[in-house]
Structures are given as C-alpha cells and as structure tokens.
Image 1 (cartoon, rainbow, N blue to C red):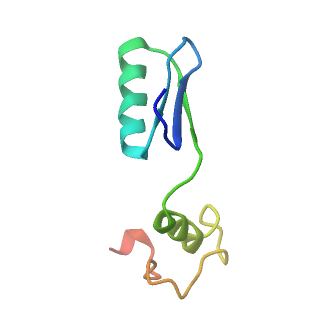
Image 2: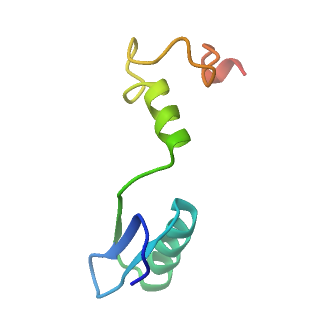
Image 3: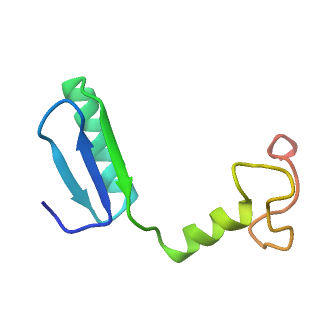
Amino acid sequence: MNEGNVEVECTDCEYRESFRNLRTARVALDEHESESGHSVDWDIERVDNGVERAGADAGVCGIPGMANPDSPLLDGRPSDEE
C-alpha cells in the first residue's frame, strides 16, 4: 500500500489503498464504486493547515455563532446572495 494520509477501503472486497491527497483518493473511490458497484469508505488522517483553518473559520456544520466572524475566508453574506 502507498504511504499517504487518506485511506480508501472497500467494505465489499479486499480493495484498500492509501493516497497522499484528497483529490486522488476521491477519484479512486469513485472509480472503484462505479466499476464494481461496491461500497467504499475512506479515512482522512490529516489535512493541510489551510484546509483545517478554513474549516475552523467556517464553524461547526454551519451552526450560527460558531464561525470566526473576523476570518478573511468569510465575507458574511449567505451563499444565495452571491
């Protein structure tokens, strides 16, 4: 298995692989599911600092009051106003 921080594992067969980034893992997950019809799961060990910061600034699942209002990543407008 490759060394990486995203692990893709099929719940229906022996397929299991590790990837260095989310994009590559997502492509492999989609390909295996579409080719085999199997159910595939993944585990993300870590993400880049920028991704972690964006998630923290956005708050917990969109719960009001949980976001960082001073974040340069948020402009304060609901997405339907853009």
